[in-house]
Length: 355
Image (tube, rainbow, N blue to C red):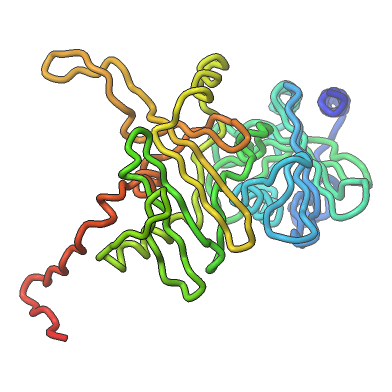
């Protein structure tokens, strides 16, 4: 909360200063060299920490790891790689689009004070090299109101900032929800590090199975008793196994009430998926159908399942949302895997190869 109050105090002071500010420009009419206009970060590879805070008490701290590509989030989780990459790109390509109109300055600062976010950018040390106070979008939605602070001091007024090569506003990428920042990877087994997967179908043990990759890379299919099984579609089995190497959930926001989440944790899952890496690292997700009530079919009311999403329960007991587009191929039954391969179909007018 201390950080949030500081945002307010800084911008209140700025509002007072604006009463006597005269906008200065260079001899050529540009803003180059004017204090508080150099928002960009030329070398983002040296950025090692990013702190974001809003006026509602939300805060996130992103820290570059000593090893690995995924940044640390609040010292507890891994952060989404795509969101961090977008921030770094924004820092590198941020530029002044223009000054704020004289008559609008006080109003803009008031909006930043009420809804703004503070973004601290570090490149080693305990003092940020730059701090952005990020406000709302411009009326045209092609720029974002911001104020800049550096170790040399704070800019005297807000500017309209944009990202070169991008049309739109920037404020939405500085979110402070820890859930939204979390890395969504469930299974991550690069190259040939995935050793085995097991898929269990609730109430249908005969449709459950395990797939193991031996040292030569050949896949072996077993039932849950460890008995070897035959499969005919070698290519199809290989493709199926590879789908488990890198799997992501959709979001950590289940949108369920706490009591419903508790009930889901206690319920038997429709499917259970376990993955094992050659290093011994295990991953697991329990999958539940997501019911949708109240649909009409032939004038009769019935319950069915959501066509786009599933619920998942992680090893840590967190209830998450999953995309059926991702998970439907993973929860195929044993009988499907043991089907004969589909013969290739010749393209129209082209003969099939004979060898």
